[in-house]
Length: 226
Image 1 (spheres, one colour):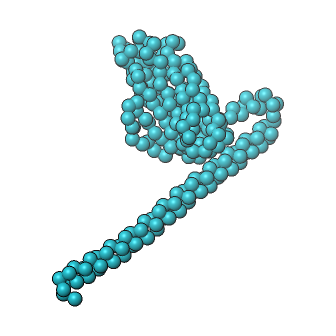
Image 2 (spheres, rainbow, N blue to C red; image 1 turned 30 degrees about the vertical axis):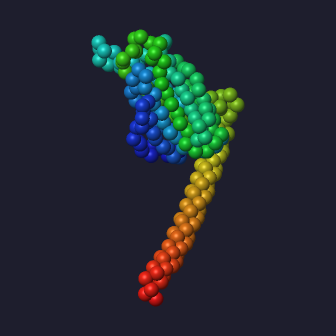
Image 3 (tube, one colour; image 1 turned 180 degrees about the vertical axis):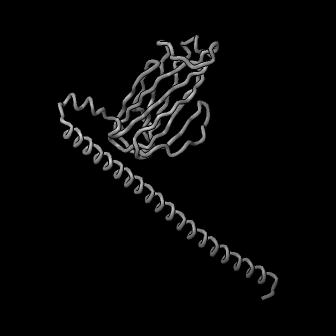
């Protein structure tokens, strides 16, 4: 996943904020949401890839006119759907938290967040700033923690990182082949439809010409011109 490809236009209400990522594996941002607003992101993820998201929220203080850390009672609901629309993760978290899921289907995954503002009178009508950082693939691994747990030397840890990177590259290649296969099938289907449509148009033109010739012949015979 290599950096943010670009923003797409927000759609509908609740607004959809779409972005696509490729091979770098991590991105961070912050955004503002209203009381009943939901924000969604779309990320291309290969299959069997672990994704970790970390977030924290800040609430707008009208008196100080600055964003301050949110109260513990404020929570965020995180929902993740796979390319087929199946819910991979749906869970309520606190004002600051971490969510994790593993993709089982390659393609665009939708990650949506919204607050439990309906139960927060202090937040009613206010604004919330959400800082979000998402990491995928080998970037989601906590290697210092892995080294301490498995008692790995520096060389062993480096070898583990290289193996994870190779595995992630293989997953990315498999996903690209999957996309190419889908594109090829779509192209072949489109070309076949265009071919059949061209044949149908040709047949219709021939039949129309034959009908016109027979009609003209009948007309001339009726007028005794032939």
